[in-house]
Amino acid sequence: MELRSMGSVVGLIVGIIISVFVVRAMNKDGKYKTKYDEMQKIARGHAYRYAYWTLVGYEALFLILEAMGVPKFFDSYTTQFIGLIISVMVQASYCIWNNAYIGLNTNPKRFAIISIWIGIMNFVIGLSWLIRSGFLVNGVVHESAINLAVAICFVIMGIELFIKWNIDRKESESEEE
Amino acid sequence: MKNLRLKAARAGRDLSQDELAKAVGVSRQTINAIEKGDYNPTINLCISICKVLGKTLDELFWEE
Image (cartoon, rainbow over all chains, first blue to last red; front, side, top):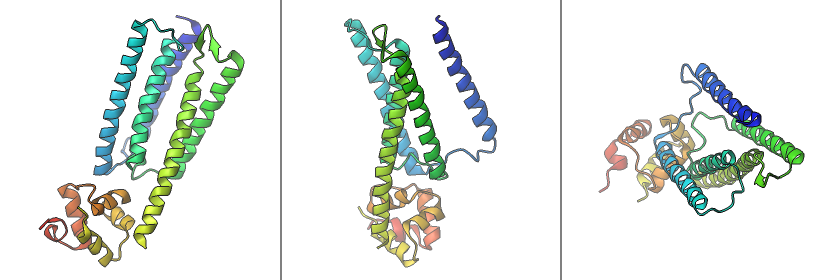
């Protein structure tokens, strides 16, 4: 295994472990657990189903392309990660349009700040790698494309949330008149 | 089918969708969907709504 890949793997594992421990430690009394009502839970269930089938379709497509010998534009690490990002986007978008993304106890302001921060961080990391290494390395797209893809996802989600928020606000105003 | 009885009962108590939603622990969109007939609530949610609005299940949710 290359040292660079080893670093990515260690980074991923450490990130997952820290996330699990931090979330568990913070959420001992379930205070920080996002709460959803019954309609939101149903919508989230549908969203997970669509995300699952998106990932299955994505993997099937790449298996077919691989079997056909189509030249690869991404290494396997980037390919798998982009599949995950796309399926997560499907889940998030479905939830946003069906009022199931923001939980009942979510602080929208804090949520927006964290999302913008993650988006900017990924954009900066992706762009700095891209400037240093270029878009293509050994004929495949550099893995920094993952960070850019995550940043783009956050921009798309932000736009979706903003549009949905406006629709809801107008609906609420017309309801109260 | 729209649930106009629910809407009327809510208006009768001078509650907004948001206020009723908070009182029964759901989102405003869920109350809106119930009033528009886009969502069939569970019996537990129906009971919570009835308690807040001071109505019976028959008065708000029984289709004649």
